[in-house]
Length: 186
Image (cartoon, rainbow, N blue to C red; front, side, top):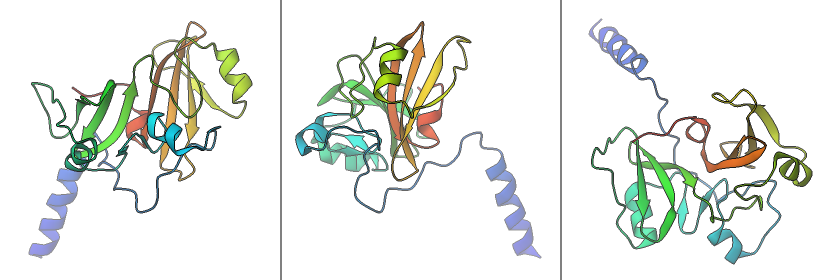
């Protein structure tokens, strides 16, 4: 009887969380977006893909990412272990989402390349011409805007572009469900 009570408490505590647990680290080699048009190792290391960028792979622990970049992540003053955004000095134009100690997503700033060969400011028409099979959905805050999703071959990761005013305004990549969150954490 005591076991049933403990299990009930665990289930109730789990139901109180409004975020899914971060995905487990990938068990296989990094996966690139099926829409990727490049295949050289040097491009993969400097371009944001559904599986990561540079030495960082989504699903790594924060400690593994720090070791891989040979740098300490800068944490926000109000670091929340459940979900925070961090930066690495070696990748200054990227913010990485860390959930429960796992790197789950990266949000890019202008100037960061990606395996889709899409840039900030590209038009929706340009992206659709390059990638006619993009999954398009309505933007949560902009009724005229869209999300363009490019799932990774593993089915667990994606690159997501945000379009507003006919142009790409945001680019992010990472593991599901983190990459699909409209808002980021601290």
